[in-house]
Length: 329
Ligand code: 3HC
Image (cartoon, rainbow, N blue to C red; front, top):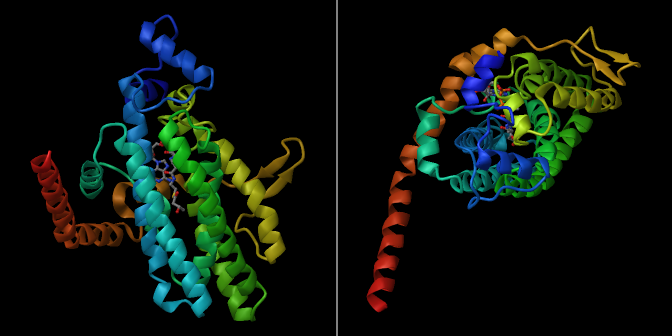
């Protein structure tokens, strides 16, 4: 695994193996400085950021689909307006993140093409369906909750544009998490059928939410190098543990049961022991075989093709304005 990690990210060199520029770069990282687009950076650092930020951006955009599915069926006008705002926020998050990735010399079109060709990923969680209104509550509570757990840490990531995008995204995600929890509170305190729907949503989305943090540390390909570069500031397992510790009391408050018989408070560790997700299922979803992978990709490709006339129009307009400016100079 170590060899694979080194291979995948370029190098995990000792200080002696680094050249002068690499050593100076690592010194800046170790001193907690932010790296900015104009700064020199190792090629592996740039590529890792493009992969992670691009994947994160795609997740925000694809994540609109399972929630957008319920806009027309929200139970009240207020819930509908809130959900609409949340889904729009996700589009904004995608935009900030694409812009952050573009500062590394990749275009949004290139990243989109790679997503459509299966060369870039998006979060596994969005390959699961939202079957009932309670799922919209559980997505806000668990999925946005898991996303924030990671994103709060990423505010301290070493790449300036990514870190700054995270600050704003975290503010909005915490609103998202609360709206989800508010739906869960209503459902859990509602009729027996509503409470059953809330429990069913938790049962289906619990393990997929744990998978959002990525494979366990021993199987994570990129973590060691990403941690050395402070692209990641916490490991996958550290964040997963924090998420479980935060979420269990929230489930108890709702009167719902986390679907894990092994869940148990561990006094010595100061956290819960819990069952790992089914990693075979995780790999199947990443390989394109989750319940909704085909639907999600088809929806994204169609949206991209349907929007071609608009993008062409914008480019033509920008070119015309540039030509007019040049003629006037
Ligand atoms: N879904 C899809 N792919 C995943 C994954 C997941 N949940 N977890 C890991 N992977 C992939 C990795 O991308 C990598 O594949 P690659 O080499 O082809 O890119 C492989 O599995 C091995 O995993 P690693 O642990 O080695 O990979 P990373 O170091 O990149 O860690 C990560 C994975 C923790 C997800 C990290 O990339 C990360 O922190 N990303 C930024 C956060 C992000 O993408 N969040 C998306 C959540 S959804 C969201 O924010 C939307 C909101 O509205 C809810």
